[in-house]
Amino acid sequence: MKKYLLAPGPTQVSPEVLLAMAQPILHHRAPEFAKILERVKQDLKWLYQTQNDVLIIASSGTGGMEGSVTNFLSPGDKALFVNSGKFGERWGKICAAYGVKAEEIKVEWGYAVKPEQIKAALQKDPSIKAVFTQANETSTGVAHPIREIGEVVKQFEGTLMVVDAVSAMGVFDIQTDAWGLDVVVTGSQKALALPPGLAFVSVSEKAWRQSEKAKNAKFYFNFKKEREGLAKNQTAYTPAVSLIVGLDQSLRMLKEEGLQNVFARQGLLAKATREAMKGLGLSLFPKEYPSDAVTAIEAPQGYDGQAIYKDLRVKYGVTAAGGQDQLKGKVFRIATMGYMDTFDIITAVAAVEMVLKGMGHPLKLGTGVGIAQEILLKK
Ligand SMILES: *Cc1c(COP(=O)(O)O)cnc(C)c1O
Image (cartoon, rainbow, N blue to C red):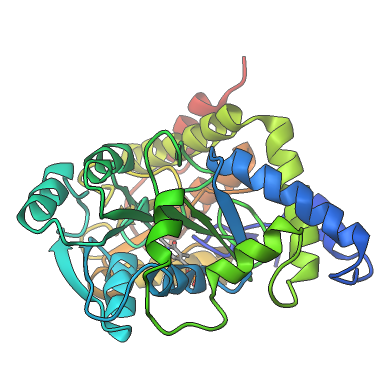
């Protein structure tokens, strides 16, 4: 059976990137490798729309999140975190692990945080040193209004805006500098369409200043050390050489396509997925701001979301995702971020139709596919 990867990470990797990574290993202190690092360093700034340093770390995305707590805060410092799903919860857990007193803004799953909630919390306590949020909460498929939140946090001189954009960077517009985003984290295995294993973190001057005062324990995720290395086209420790060679290729392809075209493609693919699901009579889980990275779909009444997810994989070789925690059994998720195009969507929609039909759910095969085709048709 042929396999199709439509999960919210890891995502599909293009043949071009796979071939680039298959080359013999370069030594990480060799001039050839420094040249590649110099190029990806610049290209990451392009992707992030920033003049800030974008650090490259060998870890999964969570390592970038952890470093974004330890490098800017001290034990006992106050912070604020948005919890609207599984990944928001993670900010709280990391803060707790390092003795940061993080106040939670709890948002019902399926909804986005309101910038006014952040504003009210910061006005009440301006000693809060950082606001942690997701750009896209992958567990619910909801995007937060990052631009507006950035505008709020910008007004508070002693507060950093820290964004987990792991499932957002390269999917939709994230203007790091223009929106005042101090620290922005992403990972290799989502929209960058690389294997897992790299985290990227941009750091603003405001954040570097705050890092000078941060007393939290850290060793491997030492951003200052990474910054010094990167200035010389080096990393502090042995980098994931092959992944960085793949990154060079992935960024080259994104640049050839153009950032706005990438966003437009990602947006259209997600729209086709959403409309096809609605056309099948299914409800989308997000109550507002459905993200273009991943679509969370409610299982029809009387059907198990986990069973849908399982049938997709077992019967048709389509790996999507189920629901996490409180959404387990209630939803299934189809990711369209990264190296995706028209027929990935057609495949996903057709497979959902066949799985539901196979389970006895009444629907006319081809309904969703037809809707997706209309949206994706090139004239
Ligand atoms: C995937 C993801 C992460 C990173 O998870 P890792 O497994 O550590 O790579 C973090 N935040 C969000 C929103 C994600 O989607």
